[in-house]
Structures are given as C-alpha cells and as structure tokens.
Length: 578
Image (cartoon, rainbow, N blue to C red; front, top):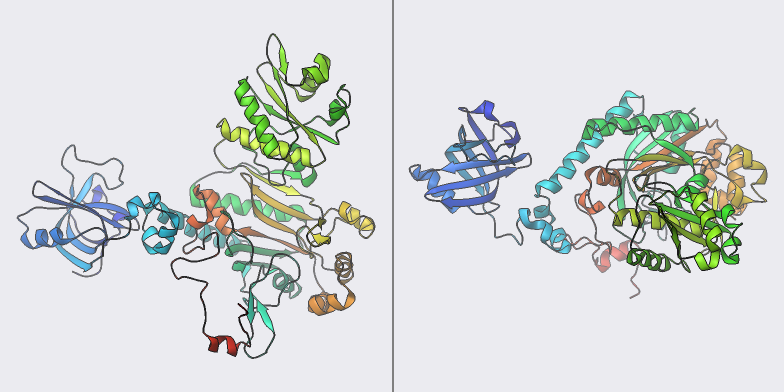
C-alpha cells in the first residue's frame, strides 16, 4: 500500500464497491460494541472508517490510534447501514471498510483538538498554528483565498496585464507610514527599506512602456496593529497607461465581479459611485456601509428656522432616521449616552406617532420647531429621528457612527455585499502631529484639473483624482490617476514643504524618468487579505493569513522578533542601546 488514490471529497456513492486508498489525520475515534469507528480527515473533508474484530491486523492497528495520528487506509467503499447516514457530511452516506491500514505518524496529545480550537485562547492557537490550521473552517478560508487568486490572475492575463515583480529592498520613503529598515552590511550607515508599496516602481514600468502591470505583492508597514491590520500583508497591485478614471473604475469593477462569481458563485450588483464630499454628507464616513439603512439627513438649513439658538447657529446639523420603530425611553436614553461617549454634547430625539410627535426638544424648540425638523427629515408615522449638531464635519461623522451602531443593535444590517466607489478625495490634509500639510493618499496623486489654479493658495480645497473601493464599510482598495509631468510633480512636493534639495535627493530619479516620455497612467492596490476576510465572513485578518502576527507584532510560533547575537550586529555596524 503506497500513496493514495483519492482525496476524501472525491469519494461518493458512485464509488461504492470500489477499492480506494485514502490518507489523512484521525479526527475522531469511537469504539462501539466491538466496532471501531474512525473519522479520517484530509484537507477536502471527513470520511468514516469502520473495522470489525474479525479483521485482526486492521482491528489491532486501529485500536492503537489516537486523535491526530496520520494514517493511510486501503479498503472498499460501502454504503452506511440504514438509518446511520450523517446528512451533515458530504460523505455521510458512505464509509470505507478497511482491508489494510498503516500508521504513518503518531501524535502527542495536542494542546487542543482542531475541532475544539475556536474555544481556545488565540495566543495558544497561534503558538500551535499548524494545529489551528487543521480546522476545516479555517482551512476553508485558504481554499477560498486560492480561488480568489486564481480568478485574479486569470482576469489580468485575459486583459493583457503583465505580472512583474518589483524589488523587496528599496530606499526609505518620506511619506506615509513608518518603514521597516534593513541595514546594509557592505555600506555602513546605509539602509534599505521593505516596500510599503511598489508605487514608484510601477510608475517607472509605465514610463518603460509596459502599459499594463499587476503583481501579487507583499508589502510592509511599521504601524500600530489592530484586527484588520498586519505589519506585512498582500496587495493586488495594478497600474495601467492611457486610461481615464472611469475606464479604470469600469475595468477594476469587472475584475471584482469575476472574482466573486468564480470564487463564491455570487453575482454582484453594479457598484454605487459617489464623491468624497457626498459620502461625508450622506454617511459621515469616507467608507460608508450601504447595508445599514438610509443615509443621513442634512438638517442644517431646517435648523436655521427653529427657536433654539444652539441648534439654529450650529455649523452642521445631521439626522439619523430609524424607520418603523417607536423605541422605549430606555432605548432613547441609551442612544443619547452612546452619542455622548462618541463626543457629542447631547442628542435630540423625535418620535412621530399617529396621535402625537414626542421629542426631547419640545421645551427648547417648541412644537413648531420639532415639526419642522421632522418634516425636513421625511419622518413618517412610527419613525424616529436622532439629531446631532456641532462642527462640520464632526456632526456628520458622529451621526454616521450612530447610524451604524443602531443598525447593528437592531439587527438591521442587510446581508450580502454592498460595493461603492468613493471619488474626488481631498488632495491634502493637515497633520497636527507633524504641523504641516501631508498627502491624503500619496504625493504622486494627480490633482483635479479644475483645482490646479488654487494649488498653492488654497491647498486644502484641492480635490484629487483619487478613488477608493469600499465593501460593507471597509476600505478594500485605494488608487488614483498619477502625476506624470515633472513640473507638476515638483509643485506638489513644494506644497508639501520639500526643498529643491530634498526633492532631488529623494525623488530625483523619478523626476528624471518623467523627462523621457512618461504616459498618462493610473492604478490601484487591493488589500488581498481584507478582501478574502470579507468574502469569508471572517472576524479578523489573522483568520485568512497562514502565519499572522499578534496585535503586538509578535509571532508566538517562532518567537519573532527575536534577539540576535553581537557578531551579526557588528557586521551590520549596529549596536543596541538598551
């Protein structure tokens, strides 16, 4: 007996009476009335093995096995006895009656069984990640990831894109997140940086005439971690020449339609498109979740007509509509408390009922003021309106957070996948931490042509040709048209406060390349890990990355990052100060 003839999932009722050889891990062993039942598991599924005492060698071998032993079984496929089928298993109507079995590897008693891993502390599971990955549910995420990658590569190949690898050791970039630095052994005091993005290299490929590029790229950012962020992650990185923004959006949307159809069998609806300004006004977020009900109400103008001066003079007044719900006073008080936790000084509520309109603001607004706000919001009988006021856009951000939280509390977040494109982001934003203007996306983003005249005088008013793909309230991809004229790129660097010397030292090679015939181009980068996480319905990126880091950036399996000996540090011209 050698090798195997089938994966478990390949065996069905059509194989009854056939001899097969399967191999895998012992998922469960049961001894019932002289019969031994083994549930054998491979990456494709589970299959029951049944041995009787009369099969002396087979029975004695199976009597020795324990959970997570590795076995090979040769036998005949047969139907399960009447009434013994397991409808929860794909192979639940069949079993194997073994003729020969072989223990390939024994196993110590595991710190946890894969079937029970979900109840185990995550640090323990990450320390024994190879056991955790045996969970069928977790394995399913990686089967999905494989299907996604296969669909992505086929799409780009069919549309004339070239798969090009860019360097993993590059120079440190001054904009964006902190770099992971790699010291040079042969050039003392100099450092490489692991790439935060292949951005500059893919633009240089456009200058080179490659025209359409993509790469499944590993990138690195030394940032604080959270559930949807890792220090190293994978991007579907794309760049293309001679296409306008709408052509790029159409093509990338087609790619996602194909990926969801092939990997999940899901047909997506056409993506909504809206500007950044509209997204902030309608949802209080630049990554709105369209599944959480109606957009916000802009009540700023209606509030100008009410008697309460605080509301009438507020820079922004936003409303959250809760349809067909007359909440209890306890619920309303809970939402008010929640708004205060989010930073609001308070929250006004209005409930319209058939006989009367109730409101926490009757004394301040009067009956007429309450009705004006309710009418402006389109409040119907049985509806509730929550009103937040404050600075713009803070009031809309707060209302947007409340909209999401209330939809979750009321279990009103619709199932499925809701995509949208958000466009026309600001080109710059002010960083209080750095005390200067910074790029909202990156410094290679093309400004909106209509705003070039105000680039130096009113930079915070300048729109960009940037666009994001948002899925269910999560940013899935970010991209833009790129600057390809050296003069305009120099202007952007100057607005960002870089001197001519700094521009030449950090980006001289890029500006020089632009002087040799750079085509108009644009691109986008999708977070592959986040895409798979959302498609799988997983709770964390760690569930779709084979060997992830913890929230502290450590790997419990290999104990990385680790100390290194003094000889290695000396070779790199480094020393540790603490």
